[in-house]
Image (cartoon, rainbow, N blue to C red; front, side):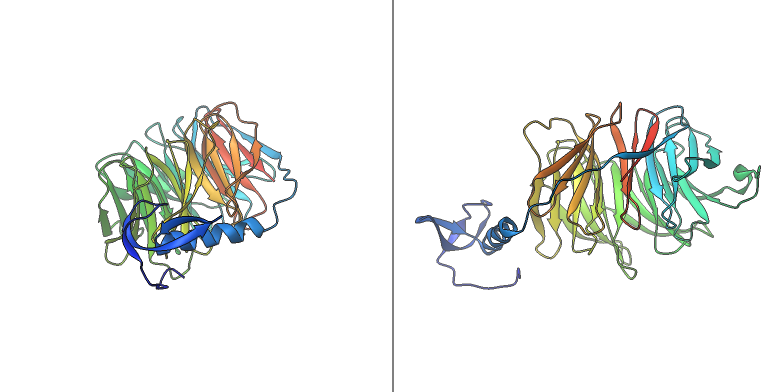
Length: 360
């Protein structure tokens, strides 16, 4: 779609994006505009979106509240079994929950506070976590009662600054990490060997997300340099970079098809980037929203974008139309993390109010 060609009348600044490009004349209500090819396509997309039926009444409630952390919840992740959740907190603890019964199944006390990252392994048999200790540690999970999980800890990754995010690849054998040292890295879990490093961010890297395809070899990262960068895991090279946010990029998440990703920022906006068009295609914001977006995730269909904000709310956006369809209240402090379950039937949010909430 973005490869179409047309006869350019002039070359100059586009009336929509202001980039210097070949232009063509477009008429709207008899008024003439000079648009580049990408903006012509965007206009066509918006016209299609206007014809799509609006979403009906949207009702979502807190179905479970998970209480047990003694301080701010900083990160969480779903297990592939769609039932268990791992969370990490400023209290230095990592807890594995049964989201249905709200029972705690495992708990680990880390050697530092501010455990800023945690992740479930694809098999569900291990978790990874880290934070101000600059390490990523992996703990195998068993069903033994009174097991000493600390004795089974394996230190996999070592950065020169805090660990901000981690994610297993499509197997339990490799893990991606992001750090305040401005880098991302790919590690072998068994040996702890550094397989690939990713340099390009000009400040702390705050978040990352792996492409959804099972054979996907790319991931996206965001950081304090206001950039979102797409990386090739095989070469370590940045293959695409986007810098349209006006402040830190706190969260990035791939669209379910893998052809786009969303980001949430301290500039109080969420943005959608199309990787094939190599550009930003939507901004999700309102004048009344003045607090930063800390975490974003898509519904399974990709029609909805859930975003947690520092004003204690979760906003639900219609991805296609760009409008807000719901505001979810319940947390009593800023929403720090948010993830949709693997089957798309629920999502979980974590907050500085020390709790996690499961919504459906």
